[in-house]
Length: 148
Image (cartoon, rainbow, N blue to C red):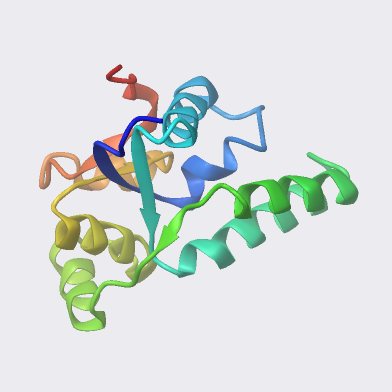
């Protein structure tokens, strides 16, 4: 087994692509997940990730994108992938949300990336578009390429 060489923050929109394959940039999201499974990277998210992933699967079931039993299996799989949960300081999340004009829950991911001095991979096109010129820490998952 190779050692973890990189640390990335991932948001729920990236992780849900692993279960909902009718979305944009699924192959790139899967490539990131597979690198983590091979222990080339470590994925980190704030604890709110857990509830966003649950909500995403509930919404998918309610919209008829997946059956309830498939949603439950997909959720169990997502929760078993070893994403490390770590919360940034609340005051810094507040400041980040105001600085970039984004929601506090989006700022939690970005603040965590800042605290860990790494990047945030997002599948949220709106978030990426809003902050991409203001910070180099947020990356669109559609551009992800494994680095061997």
